[in-house]
Length: 169
Image 1 (cartoon, one colour):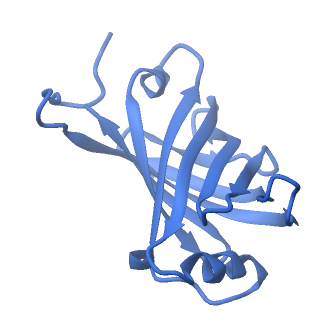
Image 2 (cartoon, rainbow, N blue to C red):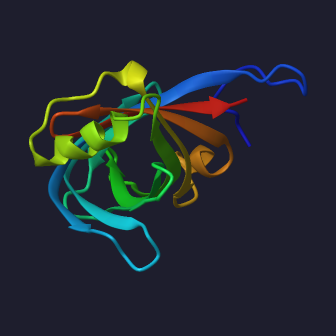
C-alpha cells in the first residue's frame, strides 16, 4: 500500500496535510420549521461544484445528493451531507460529511440561516464550521480516501459552501 502523504502524527503531536478543496453550489433549499422535537430540518440540495487537490480533481456530480441538516434547539446546526464526486479520470466517489456549525455570537446562526434566503454573508470568524467526512471509493488510484481520517474546515459562500479537507497523518 503506497502512502499518498508524507509524515506521520505522534500520539502527542497530530499532523495534518492538505488533501483537497471542494466548492459546492446549491440548487435548492427547503425547511421544516419547529418540529415536535423542538428542532428544524433543512434540506440543501447540490446543484454543481468542483474539487481539487494535489492528488485529485473533478466535479461534484449535479443533483447527486445534499445535506439534511438539523437545526438543534441549542443553536447548533448538525450536518449530515451525502453526495457524489467524480474525478477527472471517471472514478465516482461517495462523500458522507458529518459536522457542526455554530455561532460565536448570540445572533450569528439567525444571520447564517438567512443567507439561504438572500441575506448577507456572515464573516468566517463568527462561526465554527467543521466536518469529518468518510468516503466510499473503488479500489485503485483513489482508495487512499478510504484509509485516512480527514477533517474539513468550511466557509459559507453566497451560493454554497467551500470546504478544505486535511488528512490526519
